[in-house]
Image (cartoon, rainbow, N blue to C red; front, side, top):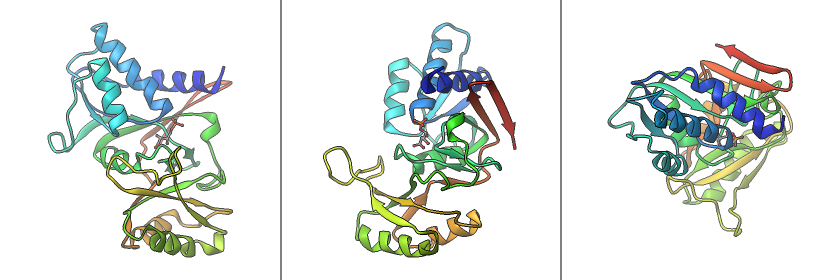
Length: 234
Ligand code: DER
């Protein structure tokens, strides 16, 4: 199976948790896209009804509209039954790194409002510890003096060989999130120790809006691998 086929397997499995009448957090990214497509398909077939979607990005909002999924927002639905979303990394304690698609703030708001958060990944996302893949730990920052904020972030994890880099779009301009902010990606060479302590230290930097570590938030992680599906519960 290709990686995308594995993503689809995990996504379809997660949609089995969806019941008619639910208010659903709709995730962002290539894995969550399959889940949203599947929800739209079941609604169309009449196998699901009375679903309200709370999108985690403008991109997912557009996808849901094209599928005819009724939408609302957190102001109207401050508590959500179930969210389905992908992740960039999953550690053995089901802590996640998210945000390489740039949607971490709205994802964290929506997933933080859910009774259940089912995370869907292919097996390539499993890591021994967060930041372990050498790939980005995304931080959403305000555009005002972003370099000042990026330097503070880099210094915070200097001992972990951290490099802080502003994320650019394909045109070479700063990537701008749905919320009009920038993303500074942290590239770590080794474990940053206690994740909660690290996350709190990041949030104490005034120019930081939110970080991409989702700690103790996923209630279930569905992993699709070559040997089949694994469901990990908190
Ligand atoms: O950017 C995000 O938070 C996405 O959910 C990301 O974590 C997973 O994206 P993928 O499903 O395309 O790998």
